[in-house]
Image (cartoon, rainbow, N blue to C red):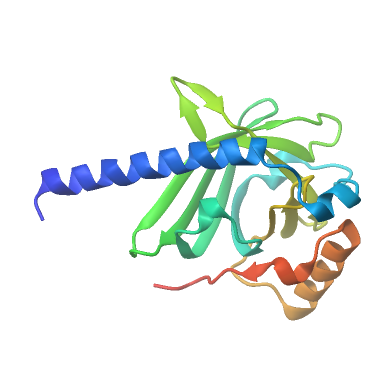
Length: 197
């Protein structure tokens, strides 16, 4: 395959993903809350997040399936790096269904500056302006920052993250109990394959 064709295909795929991100952002803003979310208050977040300790690489252990990750088949990670006060660079990666590495770069800003546990994240940028901010709430965090649960106030999205590609069974069971405690159904979380080729 010649270089021009490969470049054109990359640009076409990028445009498709960018448009998908825009549409997902619009949908997240305009869709009404789910019936279950209407009946329960937003989940409680952790009391405090040290953003410097939270920075670094995380493996996705499980998540609620969503439209903007449907092209991923595994090896999903997130990397966070503070870039200025109350602002964080976010880089998400996953193994695409076609075998390539897919990367999405965005930015997070702290909404609750007392706890640092409520943030907004955007992966859509237009002329340097970030659009379509989505909620990112830290609902559970290990004392040593080795695992975390991230969710949203409408319960539509959720992720279990870890510093390692897998979690011991007893820790995962404890996290399922924590999910129930904050209002999620653990059965809606699907395990994310790690270490696949």
